[in-house]
Image (cartoon, rainbow, N blue to C red; front, side):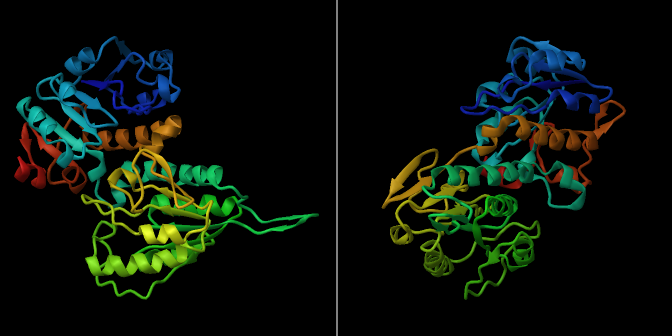
Length: 373
């Protein structure tokens, strides 16, 4: 069987789905890499050749010859039409946003897996691409904030007086939020963090940050998979008011709150931004799903009421080499679960396989996507 690695063509995407060092893990499989696929993440073509891969000059060749295709971004409609009949795709897929692509893959009797749908079970931890990429986003968010903030992060005692430390407020203590807390502490900031899920309080405290507890009643704060659940409109209004009070005393606010399959909740209102000190910084890691700040403009950096608001998109791609290494480990770990004697076996009774499965031999099995189509 041939595993194909096409060059990513989404705007701004610099990652590659398989790094050269991972080829040795795919014993019994041939690897076909599109020329230049790893260039932007620091992996030269000769590095793939040295490890036994074959180079293809065009995406048409990769898709047309490959039994299994590994990608980072969902395929475009044009790419979907190039797949070999009956082939398998493993990628970030976001099925509800790519219904036309699913339809085209269905017509080619393909099977497709979405890396973002990996179940939150212990067996799946090495395959959790959302977490691996969120780690990088959380780290980079702090660097963006530190670069934009017109003051120092650490406390400094100088002959001219003592400089107080910056105050950082992290909203959302998932993987990205926890990484943002850790990096902010390393840079010497005083850090507070909030999450609707009280269970993360110990994790926040273990990193040296203060957990902010709001006087809000939360009936059911997380899903079985550990993700935050959407709350009522009244809850969000009261939450905005209370979070705004903490944001007003912060130099940096980093927001990371997401609800799977929905628009990101607005946690920092325009009124809250007005009350923040001039020169303060917001880094909104939820920008790709609309943003946690009411004034975030996805993909842009804007200044509103004297506050710099960053709405970065695809932060992992900005650190493409290590992001690719982590993602490559995630995706090959998942592929190896299904490989038996050099061929792929899709066992739908296995929760680990069933969870990310979107299309099976041409049949769309993702329930929401099937209904939408």
